[in-house]
Image (cartoon, rainbow, N blue to C red; front, top):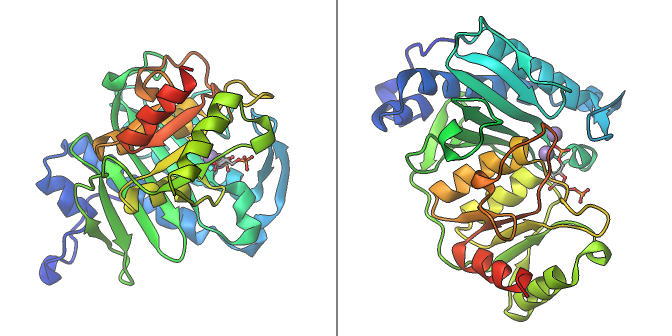
Length: 312
Ligand code: AHG
Ligand code: MN
Ligand code: MN
């Protein structure tokens, strides 16, 4: 899984070439490339036999699908021999796992398979990755070197940021990740909203915020999968995704380390914002592995508007 020689006779800009041209540091770009290749293995593993329950629960008490566990295994096994990863933290593991020799440069966080509840409905699902330089418990922007997500839908796409903008690639029939959009830039105000959580469990301030969006003509666009829902905001160049504090879950549902921080990094690099309703997601201190947080993520206008409602 080295960098190898791509077929550049067609003069396409693929993921490796893009990262090289963008000046992404060599070890980081090799790691991102390896994860992109692992994405193809996970994709090949999405088949009918893996839709069944695995008979185990994860640390959140959720039933794991066979696909959750096998995607996690594939990632962990491949990253173990990457040469660039010293620790692997996954939504599907109880503790941070030391892999490699310990002297490697990066720590990887993973939601190996996002959207488990959509697998039987055949909607798009994804993988979310964070790449940190330092312990994830030190938190703050300084520890995250890059983030990416992969979508498995009618097309397979990868969106990455190594701190130099946010870029989208689409897997073509030759197996190449071809640049689709460079330096994606969100408009300051969008026209779609993606509201997570049961309405009857929303807090009154949040409900008023959503009602204000509805009144303003925002269109509801919600699949129930964080990756496709965020991807929609990014590709449509604006709008907001929320998964708020709920009466039964004051910290919401989504996981700070595995889901929110990587997406916050990607959305901020596209000119958007990600907060818990008050504080930037990337400034929140990660205290425990399975920490959750409410989230408001997307265009700046909508996120700021959420702040005003939540402050009332
Ligand atoms: P995962 O499949 O990795 O457990 O994540 C599921 C998440 C996320 O994709 C989505 O935004 C959210 O769960 C939806 O949850 P509910 O349908 O329970 O509200
Ligand atoms: Mn998830
Ligand atoms: Mn998951």
